[in-house]
Length: 147
Length: 218
Image 1 (cartoon, helix red, strand yellow):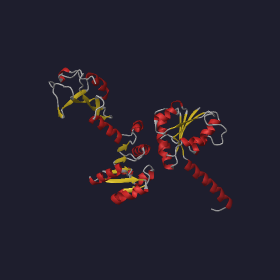
Image 2: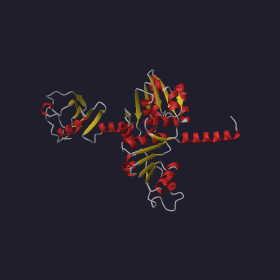
Image 3: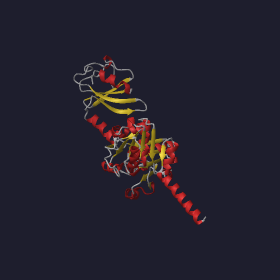
Image 4: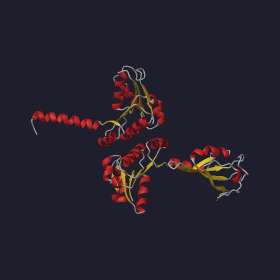
């Protein structure tokens, strides 16, 4: 599977490395050339030697998306640090380039919820964190027997 | 009319001031604290501090009862999102978006966000009109209505130079509406003769542009 990941921060780069190690073709796009270094953390060879590709460019620039291979991507992940950027580029990936699987990372739970209702596939780490913290606190409350 | 403006930069601030002056009710949303404080001194309660792409901020501004939402932040993705949410979630009847980067117009189009205002495009268009680089200049483009007004220069080798309007084979769905000669414009009739260096204004279906270009040898 060809995976295009836009936004090469902690989430994007981590995902890119695991997808590549699973044998997928992985292309990353980020406007910051320095973010390339994150791809090579804990790796013995360079990202490119390992078979990955990296493109420097703005997420909203169609030219950059095309250089990064959006036209042949099977999956598209929007993981930039801007919720609005992720929402807009996900819609572009789906509507203009007809990418089969499009997933966006949205931090704001309210925006996430509404766009999910509109049919976008969305991961909301804030929501996930709240639920996990709730679980942790529920367990603690169970231990102390408090109410 | 109740208007919500997002982004208190030069455009948003001046727009708000003008709209207030025209008697409209306006709320201006700004997310930069420093800028908010500056603008708030002049526009007082009309300014709301917050991120205009957060739904609760828009709701606090009363977006549900807005007649018009104008997104003029410096970020095109923010402007797209705000307009999309205003229209689709809150049912706002009219939206206006600003495109900071003219290359992003395609994204606004793709997501059906219109009308879109771009200062760069507007200046380029003016420049084309003032200093024509091309033989055909679009003066007005009503995309939804599929109609446009163009200006063409009659060049020295143009096949229409020296001929009357009646003698020219004008494409269907095209109307020559005026001739500008030495800075003076007039509405031609069938007997008006075109001269070299005339600027001719035509209203037409955009699909006819190529045909018209050919007739004028442009």
